Image (cartoon, rainbow, N blue to C red):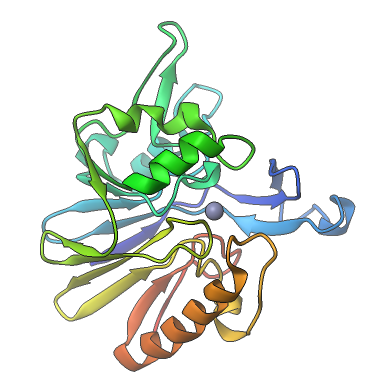
Length: 247
Ligand SMILES: [Zn+2]
């Protein structure tokens, strides 16, 4: 499998849940609001023998030409966004689902950013996100998933096409999902916001921003051990330095 991180850059985020671009070379985190966190925003593409899989969809920002950043990042890596076959969504917080759909400003209509792909989203997460709304969720970004024809709603734990396993872990938010993609003896694990950064895997730490911080910590401990025993490749959506590790 080929793994391609699609970084959208580094951002600071505070209680207001606004993502503010952060230049790692020249900005100082101390100058941001107290308690600000520094995070990368980093979807991934995994190329398998049958699929081009996108893991989460980033912030949904566009460049000055109006091109969606995630589309540009794919093109820059030699991938036509129309060739993406699957979009797996861990959860719908705005930094993970912002690029799922795009608005046509003239027609005031949203359409899926990856019209040829099948989207996989947790049904209960969708309901919860629509109800909860801002600031953590931006319903306009993903409302279309309710009615689009190429969406498969998943719940609980299961398997997609015999080689992608998923589990509903909750923990970071009530219906957060994680995925394992397994092919030719290789296991790629996407723990999304329950396992967002390498450093968090190595320390026992309960974050205030999680729905159930203690459960997040326990899952990280369990996965870190298992990842080493079973030689997983772990992807880190929010890691500033290390997009993934091969264990
Ligand atoms: Zn999140």
